[in-house]
Image 1 (tube, rainbow, N blue to C red):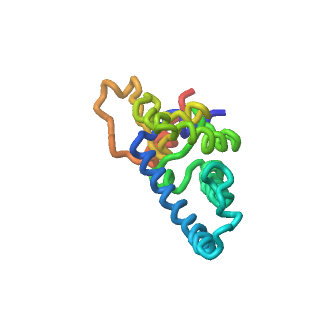
Image 2 (tube, rainbow, N blue to C red; image 1 turned 180 degrees about the vertical axis):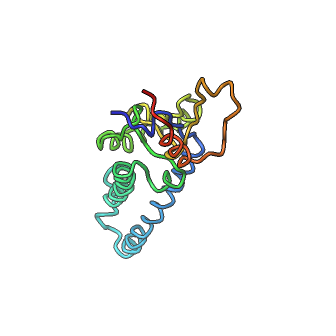
Image 3 (cartoon, helix red, strand yellow; image 1 turned 90 degrees about the vertical axis):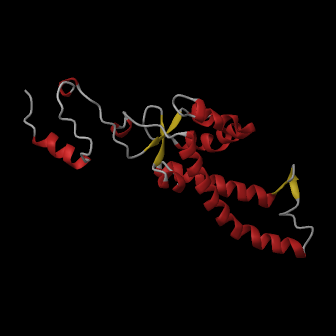
Length: 186
């Protein structure tokens, strides 16, 4: 079943998505600083700490834990609300290409493997700027898109083409009142 809000949706472009991501990274990075500082101070006094000793390439158990916390923010916020705080501030949300809410596993794949692949030389993110549908590699792999959540597209119908009764500054409430007050056609 297709969500009626997204039938005529407007895709979020490169710069607005970049701004939303930078807001999210700033928020997550600030929150994780409060976890990094005590461990850094602790590692000054104990050089052979098993939590800060690299085990996977140059990453320690603590680094992997902090990465998983950051990914958890993106996955859970997107799953439960359809957007992160940065996307909310930029009036964006993540939906499937059919306009429905993505599944948990779709979001998990998008926010982990999809973002990793998009981050390789940033080519997956640059794709957002050049793609007609404004989709990055992680969106294409997961069959999702990022759209504006509260944008109304006015579509001109055939009966109003020949008249001059187009009112550009009409609110959604006024449109709903007009539709409810019109006599039904039978």
